[in-house]
Image 1 (cartoon, rainbow, N blue to C red):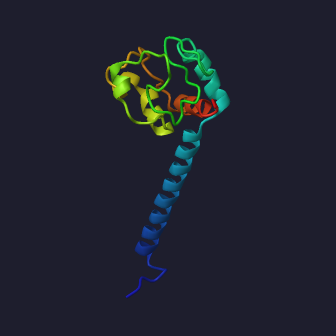
Image 2 (image 1 turned 30 degrees about the vertical axis):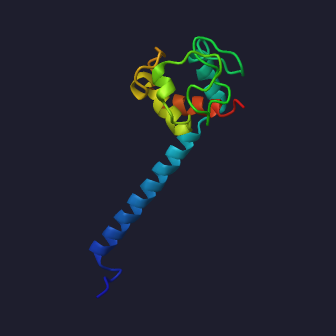
Image 3 (image 1 turned 90 degrees about the vertical axis):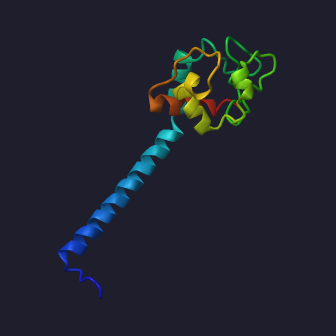
Length: 137
């Protein structure tokens, strides 16, 4: 037995299902665009927040290692930088997802790191910095 299109309960269920589907699509699109980030905005955040300790050019280490070509790189891979044992033990490549977790809470993500930075609390700032870091090649 099929429900008739005139059945108000069936119509309401169909409408709710479509609404949920539409909201899920909108949320996914919003997350995707936030995850993409804005490299120009990320550069500004980097200059304001990260540049005191990290260089954006190859071969220049400061208090922290150079972040040139960091996206996709294995942790503790910059020559001539004294990494913590915790960072040396970290084997997950610096993917955008890994960077997102680390930038949100560096000391919580990799326990025992030397970095004293508390993290970027704003998800948009993290997405923008990651987008900027992806340009450093």
